[in-house]
Figure 1 (cartoon, one colour):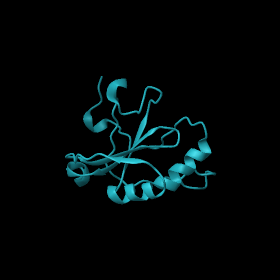
Figure 2: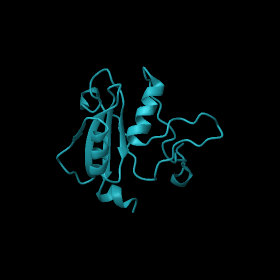
Figure 3: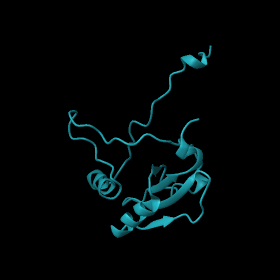
Figure 4: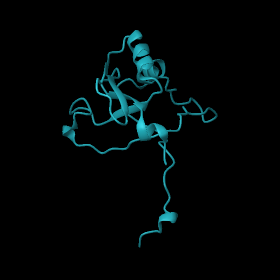
Length: 135
């Protein structure tokens, strides 16, 4: 029996992203230094990284999507940014290679880069309905 629509519980957001890394401490430092993502707290008395409320996409994709940067990778991160051009400039100044997608889409602008372990990272400056929020 299906629950009534008003009775269905929903998750409230992404609570964590856990990735396998060859050098976990170095990868955490890189995400903190270049993207501002705080590393996991060292104790339960410290708060984890807080992100701004906003749209999040969970998309299952096939191996042929090209979204993961090769068969050896099975995940990719997409981070929302307020100002894509400023973030790209900051990353490039820090020695990170970033490719800006020249096309502007109805849902925003995108740029791609790789973390030090070769994992795909996408930056997204939302526009349209994703910038406005739920109706």
